[in-house]
Image (cartoon, rainbow, N blue to C red; front, side):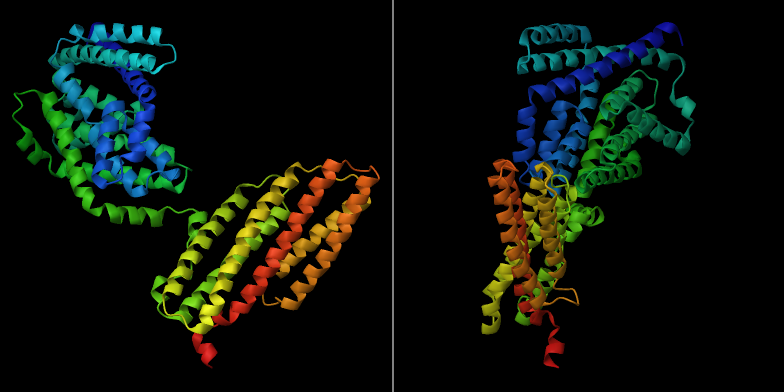
Length: 539
């Protein structure tokens, strides 16, 4: 191998990768809004989701970018996991466009006829476009030209190698050689972080005679596995949705690769006849087994999504799932009411956890408080839906009268969470009171609120209606004394009016928090008779 061949290979690879980078980035900048619109609005049906994945990946030439975008849209709630999975299917078909560009243009047409003018026109648009979309389009156009210039250099380099040392002889023959070729395809894709780049190198190597079609086909299958590395790395330590989408990407590519290996002889027998052009055979093969993968995965998509939703879960998602509410018991009113009261009891524990967390917070509402608030909000929605179903059934008069109390309890817990967020936020910006006597009164009032919250746990064996009502009455008296003392401090000029108002608002929110906790506990305690299993009531 002489120095000229090495120069062609290295230079061609560099130009090709630079062209791919410019093409992908330019298209994403020029059509970013349109691509987001396609992904968020054109995925309403399974077929449209598939076609959206094909279209976007064909345009941006990056299945990894589409996968990351799909993850972001699922996390934002703009598309469902089912929609994202079908976009992933389409992206694997869309990424085969690179093979067709290489096979039909890169290896069949005189590159200089159009590649160099594309680079010149593209850079002219870039220079004259400033920060507009025209400039981004110019970058994409120049990248498109460089893409084919790089392909031309790679073709020349691999042609020289193929005449002297066919690369597939280094891999050996038989199944062992095919296996090594598959691993090589995986490694090339992982190292380059681009299946499109790996495909271009493999196709130009095969077109130049450096690789046999069988060995190149095994490497092409390897690129499909290697491209999942980007999604896997992006999902490490990420949200459950990110892990689900990445897992769906891996599952599709692994199953597709297995099917491609099993059907490799048959597929090549059917696709043969392209006039002896290995690159076209490989492009056909690449497209065919990705379409085959969609055909295999399409019927089991719902089961795959269900499995992923069960497998990758966050604490928030697990705790936000109703534990007792079962639509099957709605037709049995007593059992339905029993389930509803049990769920309200669990919600009470979460609401008290939120409240006590806010009371002890020294900074703004943290991640734990926000997560718990979202959990409570979802449970409140579930309780509301379950109560509506109960009301539609023929409820006995006894249950029909008390069902509104269950909704009251749910509302009190919602208000507790909202007050807790306000308290945590206020405490993070409120200045410390320098007056020791007044600071002690405020601290004592705050401790009284926390003690009431501790006593408001209806599920605690020591819960007492009389005790919590007495504590609230004491807090009310203490609040009035605290309010008077704060106002006297303002009148005497010991504290600025602004700080007095802020402190009064905070203490008022704490008092209201205690009131909501007391009301929720009293109403829930009144419903506890329905939390007793029916057989015990009968006894």
